Each structure stands twice: as C-alpha cells, then as structure tokens.
Image (cartoon, rainbow, N blue to C red; front, side):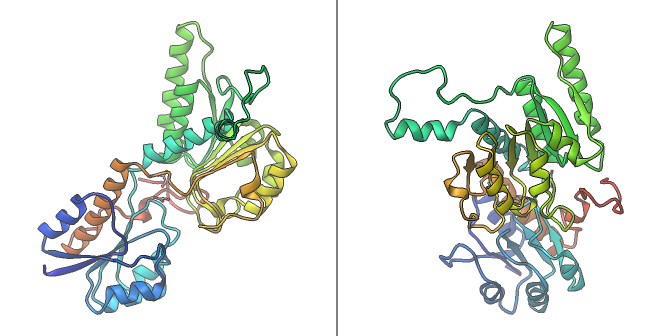
Amino acid sequence: GKYRVVSTKAMPGTRWINLLIEQDCRVEICTQKKTILSVEDIIALMGDKCDGVIGQLTEDWGETLFSALSRAGGKAFSNMAVGYNNVDVNAATKYGVAVGNTPGVLTETTAELAASLSLAAARRIVEADEFMRAGLYDGWLPHLFVGNLLKGQTVGVIGAGRIGSAYARMMVEGFKMNLIYYDLYQSTRLEKFITAYGQFLKANGEQPVTWKRASSMNEVLQEADVISLHPILDKTTYHLVNKESLSMMKKEAILINCSRGPVVDEVALVEHLKANPMFRVGLDVFEDEPYMKPGLADMKNAIVVPHIASASKWTREGMATLAALNVLGKIKGYPIWSDPNRVAPFLDENSPPPA
Ligand code: GLV
Ligand code: GLV
C-alpha cells in the first residue's frame, strides 16, 4: 500500500480493513497486550511514516500526539467513538490533522443500554438476581423486591441530541412515560412524535402521554422520576450533576448515565446513594475509568456496567467502518466523513445551532 494507516486497537469485523486495503492503504494494528496505550506507545506505533490513525476514547489525543502524527506525514485521525472529549481538536487543527468521530451507528444501541439500565434500576433486577443466586429466595412475598412502575411516570432527558432523543422515544412509546427534556435546542421531531402518540392513545381511550421542554436543567431534576444524561462532556457539562443537583431530585428518582463519567460528581453521588436508599442509579461510565470512587461498588442501589453502551456487534463493526472511512476520505483528499465540529454543542449559547 501507498499509505500507512495505524489502528491503536484491533476492531470488530473485517470490512474496515478491506475498505482501507482496497484503496491502497497498508493497515497496521497494534498488537500490544495492555488495555490502554500511553502517549509513548502511540508515538512508537506511528513511527516516522503514518498517514492516518484510528484511535480510541481511552487515549489522550493532544498536542504531543498530533505533532508526532504531523511529523510522520499524517493528515487524518478518527476516534472510534462519538464522544471526543479525549481529543484536542484545536491541537489537531494546529498541526493540520483532520478529526473524525463515529456518530449515528451507535445511537440506538446506546439508547437501548440506557433503557436497559432504567428498567433494571426500576425493577431492581441486579439485586434480585444476586438474591436468587445466593439461595435467599424462600418463597413469594407481597413485599419482595418491590420497585417502580414506569408507566405514567415522567422520564427526564438532559441533552436531547441523537442518543437522548432515541432514548426518550423508547421510554415514551415503550412504557408510556411522559417526557420532560432539557437542551439548548428544541427537539421538534421528538415533540411531534410524542404529540402524535399521545393523540393515538387518547383516541384509544388511554391516558395520553405528554412532553415538556424545560427552561432549566433544575426543572428536569425536580420533576422527573427517571433522569438520563446525554450531553457531550466539555467544560460546561463537567459535574453537571453534583451535590446540589442531586438534592433537588425526588428521593425515589432513578439516575442513568451513559454519556461520560465526569458529567456526574461521583463522590457526591456515593454520598447521596448512602443517604437515600430508595434513590437508584445505572452507570455505564465513571469519572476515573476504569476505577470507581470508593464505596460505589458496595451500594445495592447502584447498577454498574463497564462502558458498554455501544457494544453490539452491528454497532461496533459500524463504528470501525466509519472510523476507517473518516481516515480514508481525508487521505484521498475529500473532507473528513464525520467532523465532530458539526456535533451540536449542548450548553454553549454562543455556538451556532447544528445544521
Ligand atoms: C463511547 O463512549 C462513544 O463515545 O462512542
Ligand atoms: C451526541 O453526540 C449524540 O449522538 O446524541
């Protein structure tokens, strides 16, 4: 191959490799056994000729790596993720490297995990499973593992982009929940969908579902029974959920986070879980991955899974393919396929709305 493309990890499927090979690229996949590569590992991997890199969200793509990539003749980098808080896009731009991410293919998969965690928390699935396996079940009882009924309750969505909107639709249509959402931008399609679904229910003699666009995040925290976080992580959303916001939520609320760990102050969350045994959380992401803050693992009212929201075969193969297309496109002289600068900002009023 004329071009050398490096992937810092083996990725699912073969389509992404074939796409690159067919287009004159030699593909090199890192064979190191360690899970998270250091900046030095990646510099060694890129060597002195590297046209493009596919990297992972666990890697720190800043000044050092982009300047090294640029010295190796590289012009393209794609994160194999929709989130790109691990990428300093300004540094990339400074060194003439175009950056891509992988939106779209993981929207439903991620929303489905958020929905799974919502149900698991509402119905105490993990606690009940542990109880069963521990041999503690000695017969049906009226008060055994009583949880929350979602129907007729309010689901709160913070960040109604692609993933937040998909999750909202699932919870409203699947479980007949009412929606309250907070985002800088109006989600017209979501509102229309819920209005139409509400009318359908009403015409069938059922209680209609409703929606409301909140004027502040606090309104969502105060009113919702299940709250799911779907913002991007940047300085405006760091510790968006902290001690104060937790204290505004209902005592029996459920909080779901499938976005990025630092959106939640995890130390404050552990304190809140201790003080409020009826409050429950479902977490896919953590402030300090792969670690959990002290005490979290002991909480019965927390469900924790290891950052698997996009982990379906179809989605992971799609993410790999999209990442390869991003890099390939740029190498071949086209604009990068998916440019994260086009992703909607969440709380920054000074940024233009998404196209
Ligand atoms: C995963 O966390 C992603 O951003 O794709
Ligand atoms: C954010 O990137 C989203 O897909 O909602």
